[in-house]
Image (cartoon, rainbow, N blue to C red; front, top):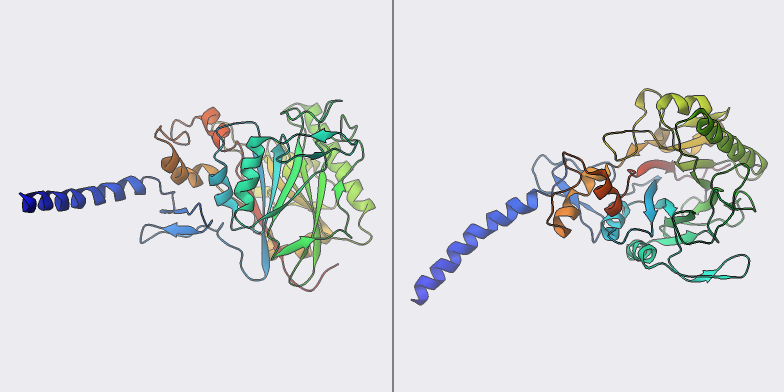
Length: 360
C-alpha cells in the first residue's frame, strides 16, 4: 500500500510541474520573459527571449523615466509593487498626477497636511528598491483652492538613486512661480528638480509638467502659452546652468501639434516620423508625453537621447497573473477603465543623459 501511495505521489508531481510551467508562461510579456518584482531585473523564460531596452543603467549614462500615474494616491486597488518593480532599474523616475502627500508635513503657509495611505504605498514600494525622493512643498492646480488632497490638484515628486545622483541645491530648482493656484500662465505650476551626478559632477535640471488637456484651439493655445512661460523661466535662470529638460504629460493630441507649439530654439525627443503614442488607451492613441529641451542642452543627451516608450500593457501581464484571477484588462478587448485604476492610462517614457566631466 505504501509503495502504491508513493508511486501516485510521484505521478502527481510529474503531472503538476508542467501544468505550473504552462500557467507561469502565460504571464510572459511579448519578449518571452518578465521583470522580477523584487529586484527590478528582467528574466527570460524562452531561448529566443530578448531582454528589453528598459533594463538597467549602463556605464556612461543615466536612465531617466517620466511616468504619469493617473490619480496616484486615489485608487485603492493600485498595484504599486508592480509599478515600482517596472521602473526600479532606472536612475531617476519623475512622477506626475500625485494627488495627495504620502507623509505628514507642513504647507508653506504653516498649516499641516495629512498623509494619504494610497500615496504612501507607492512611495514605500519605491524606497524599498533603493530610491530616495523629493516631494514638492505643496500641491498646485487650476482652481483657486489648493491643499485639498483630491484629484483637483497635483503634487510633484521625483525618485532618484543616491549612489548615482545627488541634489544640486545651488542650481535653479523648485516651483516656477510663487502662486500655485489658478495661475495666469499655468494650469499646474511646473516644478524643477536639480541634480548632479556622483561620477563626473555634471548637473542638470528636470522640469516636470502637466499641461492643459483638451482638443480645442483654445486648449492648444493654452499649452503653447504654458511652454512659452517655461521657456521664459529657463531663459531667466540659465546664467549658471545650461542643461534643462522639460518632461511629462504635455497632452499633445497629435504629432503635428508638437512641431507647431514648442518654443523657438527648442527640440522634442518624441516628434517627427518617430512620434509615438504614450497613452495606454489603444482605442484613442495620443502622443501625450514628451521631453523637450533648448538646443544648448543637446550635448547632455546620450546618443541623441534614445527616447523609448515602456509598454505598460505588455509589462504588467506577469504581475496581473501573479495577483489576479480575472481576465487581464490589457488583452483584447482592452478594458481601459479597469486597466487605468490598477496601473495607469499612460506608458512610462524613458530617455538617457550622459555622465561625463564636460558640463556647462
